[in-house]
Length: 397
Image 1: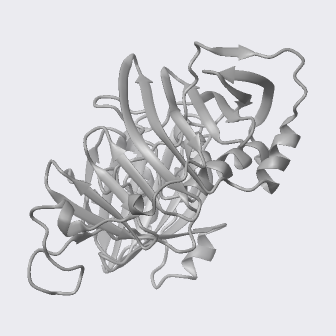
Image 2: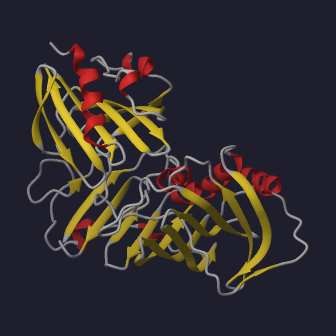
C-alpha cells in the first residue's frame, strides 16, 4: 500500500507477537486474577531493567509455514542487541541503531529518537493497550503454566472489522518495530483477526507469548530461554562498524575519505483528526475524494502527514476502511523516489499511470506541482480507484 510507507529491508524486522506452545500449557483451577488487576500492575509496576531470550517466530498463511529465530538482549533504557538466524547483527547503542549484514558486508544505521519508547518498554506498553482499548473485549483470564513458567493467559475478541495487520499495529504502537505480514507468496494484510491470546509471566508480567488467529492465517512467536535481570555486560551494546565490515572503513556522514556507512532516514509522521487540520500544516491543498466516489461501507479512519527528509518532500495520506478492505488517497509536493509504474491513463486533464500490485490497484498522476496517488484493495478493483482519482482531479486545470 504505497501511501503507508514500509521499510521491510531497512533493518531486520523484530516481531512482537509470541506463540502458544500447546504442550506443557496447563490451566490452574480456581482462577482469581482479573483483567483490571493485571492492567493496574502493568500501569504501576516497574519494567525490568534488562532481559535476554531467543525469539522464535512462526507464521502460517494459507497452509504455508515460515519460521525463524533471533537472539535478543534488551535493556529498559533503550540499548538492544539482536543476532538473527541469518547472521545479521543489530545493535542499538542509545544514539544509533546499527545493522551489519554479513552476506553483503554492508553496514547501515538510523538515528534513534531520544523520545521514543525502548523495545522493552514497548513490549509492556503493548499489553496495557490491549487491556485498556475498549474495542478489544477481554473474554477469558486464567492462571496457567507454559513450559514450566507460571503465566496469566488472556484471550481477547477483536472488533468485527479488525484486520490482523491492524491488530498487530495496536500492539506495536509507536515503537520502531513492525511485523512481517507477508510470506513468499501470501499476505495477510486484509485478513480479519478472529482471536488474540497473550501469556504474561506471573511474576514480572513479561509477555512470554502471544498469538493472533485470523482468516486462514496465524501469527505466533515465543520467547524461549528467557532470563529476567540476567546481568548483561555493557560491551554487548557496543558496535564498531569498521571492525564488523571488511569493506566499510569510512566515516559517518562527514564527507571524508573512504566508504561512508549508509544512513537510513525514516520519515516523521503526525496524525490528524480531519483533512482540514492536516491541510493547515502543509503548503499544498490536500486532495480528498468526493464522498459519493467512496465504496459502500468504508469510513475514514486516519489522516497522516509524512515528512521525508531524504527526499525533501511532504505527503498527506487519507485512509478509509471497511469490512471488505481499505482505500487511501495521497497528496504530495514532490514525486516519490520509489513509485509503482503501470499503464497510461487519463485522469481529468492529466495523464497518469495505473498498476495492479500484490495488494491492490494503485493509480498516480501529477497536477502542476502536486503529486497524487490512490490505492484500492483488490476487493474494490480498478473502477473504484479511477472514480476516486477523477473526483480529486476535478480541481486540476
